[in-house]
Length: 135
Image 1 (cartoon, rainbow, N blue to C red):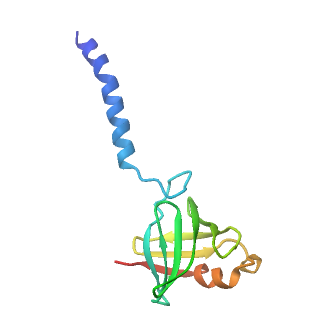
Image 2: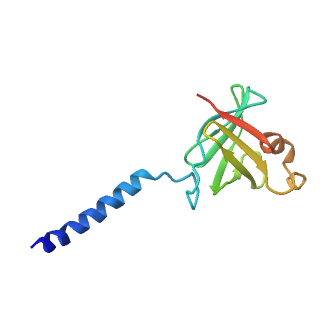
Image 3: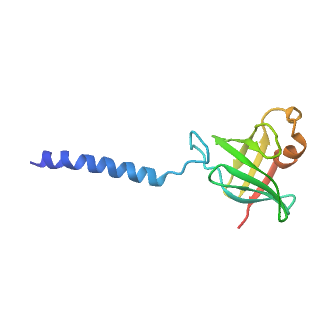
């Protein structure tokens, strides 16, 4: 009798564990792995407090200076690699390594910055640049 009750209870326990696992994990925007937790929100450039980025959970972003939006686009994250997939300035995709310590988000180019046809503005915005999460 006890075995029958246990057999009936097993599917409920399995279903409950799947629901709890789904509720407890957060995937990154456009990330196939979800291994790291790429931060979303408004970030201010540590060297230029009037400039920053807004990274949204849906994989979209915008760059701003003061109250002006400079560029918008889409991004993806795979592990510790952040890739600008598309933007309205017409630049091709480009990837950066990132680190996140809970407050500071730092980007560094992968490869040679000279190879990027949009290197001037992306280089200044992402190569060895740290952003601070805005409160």
